[in-house]
Length: 210
View 1 (spheres, one colour):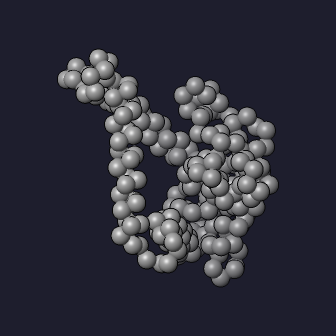
View 2: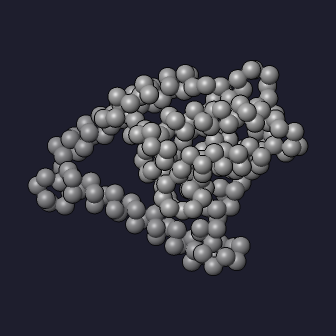
């Protein structure tokens, strides 16, 4: 399921792994993540990163787990392109990738024409391009403001390494997991659904203080 729930930022100062909600956390694949599933996923991530099984995550263990996740992601992308599963990318498979890109590009062009080609001549005039550029600049400004807001929120997030000893204990990890779930569960029903948490900006901004 693509972007089924929330594309979460991983919490805290240097801890670039650990607690993420998404398809992997949706254990029964019903399109939502319960608190139990979220907790189980967080536990699994901790144990996967704790290479020496001592109940603490060092900086090297966190770094190693991050690299493992990156490698897994690369393998998934390769597998998606390698449609016949032979471990090689043939010309046909690469051509298919190129065709897919062209199709997406054409779809974007058609969407722009449909929205901004007010005289329906199949092209964008200078005036129409000016309108398109103004809208694009407005969206960029909004995104910039959102990034600034996100950065400010990030500075207020609880630290994973609460006692500052350079190690992340299981209890520290699970404590932040608990706080993250509460922040994401906008309606406080104990279940994360598609888009929940992500919509806390804008119209649902009034929930930020929760």
